Length: 522
Image (spheres, rainbow, N blue to C red):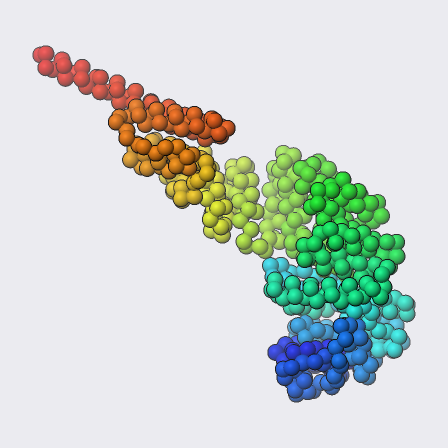
């Protein structure tokens, strides 16, 4: 069996190292660790585990440090890891099996699946992690270092293997920002050495995009999209184009963004990721027919860019959600329902109350009232206060339409504390329900809040029933001036309801008076 060396570069990783090496040490023949200046007990911990430890003075160059670790490797093949990488037992067993078939010719490099754990989602890509121990095979690039370019020049075969490495390096916003700023410094140094290097421009685009410096990101993505990039690594070329189009759209340059996406479609007509993003572009422009025509041609199994990390569950969720949106707006409600239900399988962001609300509205549209209530109640349970009020109002409206007035009233009451700045519709609908149930004291309390929200003078000295009717006619007039048609409608509806009650009451009072007069006469 061929020997396998594990090569790592570390700094201050005393806590990570034991966990990282726990399982994989059983699959490798030696562990080479290059320490770049630890001030904790990393070196002692590494030696205790059985690693060969070497020191290397940090020189702002990740490739230099990694290549130092390769110099000390004696195995036939090399696997490289970071201290925040993890390999489960099952993956290590696969690695041991793979090791048994390493070719003696040393002419194959192996690409493994990398699972990046982000703060709110998981993304995956493929990376060359195992390669022959050859002096010509060395990492390139001061940061985002690559071994694949050297492998390509040597004409090595590339084999994708079903072995996963879990990478925990992207954990908190603070740490991600620190890494981005560090990478930016190194990439700009790299650019001075190789000003026309497309891979450096691509990573600068990625870094500036993360740091929200859109114009700089656009500049570097454009410089990455050269023919050499397209011929050497089409996936990076496609990623540069997709990100460029996205940023141009954000900058208001929609026509330019569409040109980029159509160009990618011409160059890579079979690529499903390109088709997906073109479909998304049309979708956000509310061009549902074009969006649907593009999206139905996408094979969701192929929504990946191999070497570029993509949040695979999130992108599949967006694919099915986009399909559902198109179907719903074009009137294909059965197909829309199927697509929404598929999107739920990939829905991981339990804080996305807007998506849950959207489902609730859709199920109400197709008259599945139980599911409509279920999703809207879920949305309410996780929404922030401002959105929570809108969702209570929305669910209250739906419940009114299906005749569940008591529950509707509870939701309008929950929305009531948030009415302000003229947003009085929940209050008006609640007032109407109070009038329906002849709860006039509660109606008057709500009326005060409505008037304050409309900045009307609050002086509710109501001498009789007719004063309350006149007040709602006045509220309707204010809403009309503010061009709030629905609020005006409900104000006048309340006035009409009160007027009807007054008419019935007057007739009843008149009859009783007439009867009393007759009795007195007799």
